[in-house]
Amino acid sequence: MRGREKILTGVGASPGITIGRALPVAPRQVQVAYRYLREKADQEKEVERFRRALDQTRAELEAAKQGLDRELSEYSYIIEAHLMILGDKLISQRTMDLIRSQGINAEWALAQAVSEAQAAFQKIDDDYIRSRFADVEHVTDQVLGHLSGQANDLGSIREKVVVVAHDLSPADTSCMDLEWVLGFVTDMGGPTSHTAIMAQAKAIPAVVGLERVTREVQSGDFMIVDGSAGVVVINPEEETLHAYREKQEAYELYAREILAQAHLPAITTDGYQVEVRANIELAEEVSQVLTYGAEGIGLYRTEFFYIGRKHTPNEEELYQNFRTVAQRLENQPVTIRTLDIGGDKFASSLDMAPQINPALGLRAIRFCLKERDLFKDQLRAVLRASAHGRVRVMFPLVSGVGELLQAREVLDEVQEELSREKVEFDPKLEVGIMIEVPSAVVVADILARHCDFFSIGTNDLIQYSLAIDRVNEHVTHLYQPLHPAILRMIRQVVEAGHQGGIPVAMCGEMGADRRVVPLLLGLGLDELSMNALAIPGVKQIIRRTDRLTWGKLARQALTYPTAARVAAFVNQHLQEQFPDLFPEDPGLS
Ligand code: PEP
Ligand code: MG
Image 1 (cartoon, protein in one colour):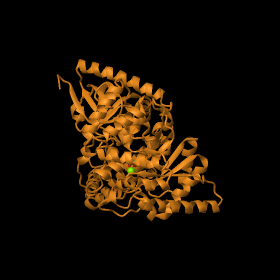
Image 2 (cartoon, rainbow, N blue to C red):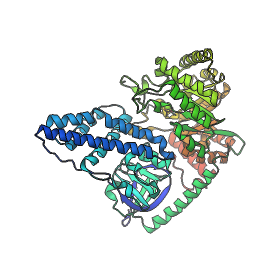
Image 3 (spheres, rainbow, N blue to C red):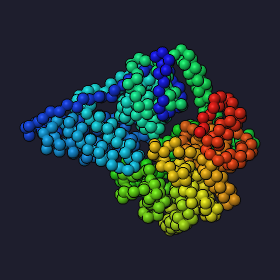
Image 4 (cartoon, protein in one colour):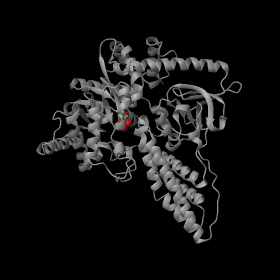
């Protein structure tokens, strides 16, 4: 810190640099006061007042859902989840019971119901689910706002500002006119928080998880938000400002340049074409995928049909959805992954027994092989959609050939059924598997004989190989994509795939890091699939990479003993070969 300048570091949630005045917003901070209501009639009036606040909140959420524009429409499931919380007995019925049984005012009763819910959430072993308690808080804050009669003034922003908040709910952001928002900074949140998702969809720089930014910033303070590096500078010195203005200009130029070339094929300097595809979770993401130049969908995660809703989807619903995606992608492949529920992904619509080690439990393909009817519904939907585009199917978490053969048997059975029913499908539907369990790496040569493609899921492969829980913040420092064991496994899978005559893709986060991409090409990967935003940058670096040179470098990297050593080696070669792309140390570690 120099002078009044303060630098805070958080999580870069949406890339880009923005400079402007701060507007701290405190969405409805309501003081909850206690009132005792002795009379039955007063208690009933209080229940009515609470019901009205629930109705107002519901109406506000419905309006927010309707008001989502095209880029954000895919995120309506977040609002759906809030509507479900609002209707949950644990919150609404419990509050009314407390008003009546304890004779307390609605605000006090609601706060008590929430703290009971919090205690229940804290007992849950799964970090992801525990983190969803933030949704309960967002919704109840909204109800408290209505109880107190406080208006929400987020909709009145009419000048270009950096929005500073403790946390923002989808209802908060949906009432803002985002045209006026230069950037978002919040105390709370991680890379998958609502603020991050929404900021990315609207290409607004954002830094979240800053912990104390609301305490450090005052209204009108000048600030720099570097969403790429996850850094916020409050009241910067002239010199800092100058440096960031240059960085901002360079970033904007870079972003424009890579976007303009996003639709060019990704061919290396030595003439090798790499397929760059997108990972999606919802059909509505397809427009963004097309804008960013994806050559098809390399991973369609289908868990969202089962998360945040009360009923499992039926075959027809899945089919309609898959067909729409396949038709919009025209002749580009759409790789639909069968349900990968369990582990870090939990489904509200499925009755799953709690497990001590969910990551090692009844998850993904294991779950589907047990729940045959559910699995068959998915496969029927995938097959029917295959009559309308280039659909491929992919099985997650395969640990050995037995599981693959069983899954294929179900697929054959479904194909026979459809043929009997004279329903159209692609009889040559390609069948792929994700390689994300170490045992699958070891037997990849056997697996390659029974499927049409591999896709390496590094998110899980790293978790299972290095014994690092992918959602546990206490071990994130050990989550090392460049660990020699991981690099050797990638190499082994590529060799096994190629010897078996099938292509090898990567759809884990590792493939979205452009600093690692040349090394991955050197290791021999044929296809990369990633979040749409990362595609233009990855395609650009592929076009600048000499695959043969990086093949030699990869062989050398494979001899190093530690991730740190590999990282230093790759950093050095990136800077030497792409000085314009990496003017500073690329920062792999
Ligand atoms: C992976 O494990 O790398 C992967 C892409 O699958 P998910 O993140 O959905 O588990
Ligand atoms: Mg996975």
